Length: 111
Length: 122
Image 1 (cartoon, rainbow over the protein chains, first blue to last red):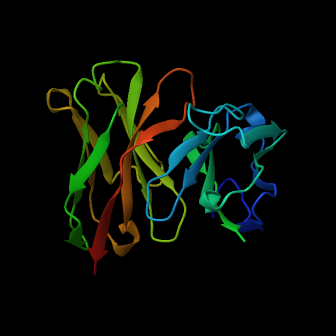
Image 2: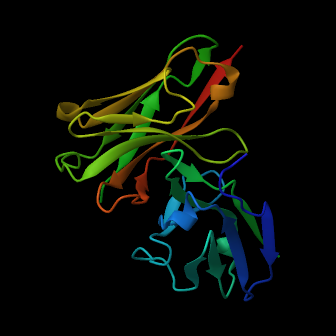
């Protein structure tokens, strides 16, 4: 069981908006530790999508955005496209466990 | 562009030592501002952090694997390696190597290697 909790799956039609949540606790997200998001397309390695909660690396469309409030973080994807179909993982650091932690992953299906 | 590539033995038997190497593109390991990490992903499951090493040779491991894991560095070969002793079927996973900036704290993993499947048979 992952320290960070994500919904197992979300779905949306092309052009729609979806939000993926990442719920932690006072010892990780709530302890002011940054949250990062990764996209993993089938059969490929994860790659960085959002870092430091809401920053996009070069090349990532502005359809992807991140936010954080209290002990939770969220990834928003607007204007869904078929190529967005992938698994999405949140990641942070747990101050009590002293370890890098990941969410269990969310499978996005574009209907 | 920094590239990482995992290599090693893809099939092993239970109780053996898992051994993998990550080769980094030439010159990419010269900076002290990066740490070099191993992660894994069991089939159909979530990502798990294994441990890290910096260019001073300092290591830090996941508490769940401490005692079985060792990460080492060969700067002259642009490589760092992972050894996991007493492997079991639970260690079957795709293993990834990745780079992390040491500043700021809790920087993201970027980039990642392509991944290497290790299967431990009983």
